[in-house]
Figure 1 (tube, rainbow, N blue to C red):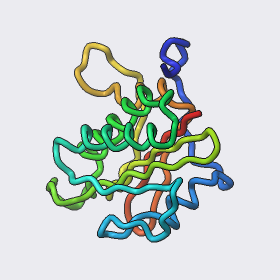
Figure 2 (figure 1 turned 30 degrees about the vertical axis):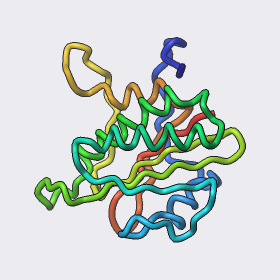
Figure 3 (figure 1 turned 180 degrees about the vertical axis):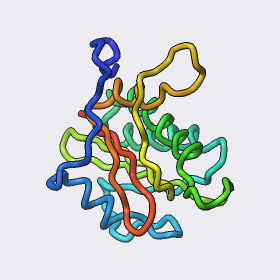
Length: 172
């Protein structure tokens, strides 16, 4: 499971390569405001999650079901953890700073595959970019992005105009 056992959790935090096949899917095939994908494809699925405390559990359930359907079951444990962290971060930090926190902003999750590569991406309206930091094991919070780096091949942020961002993680 993941790279945690390897001891290297520095994890590449990166902008996607301009040639990353999935970046154009996220930007061009992203769901509209009703949660429907404009360009549905069997290997590119988008889901709308309500911004509520149950969203991480719902995201995990969706991701596990998709991975099993796609016969990518070896990734389940790692993806479950990463999806949970990304959705939790979107709930906590993904609101535009000019607006008060409300539960009416949806979160969108994209699950994409090509060959043996799997990408999960979580969209929120916030303009603040995630800031990875060294985890303080004495604190209850602040370890999420460190865990993401430990359990995926690469992760990063893809800004979306006019508003928001995808925080993505790729797996093999």
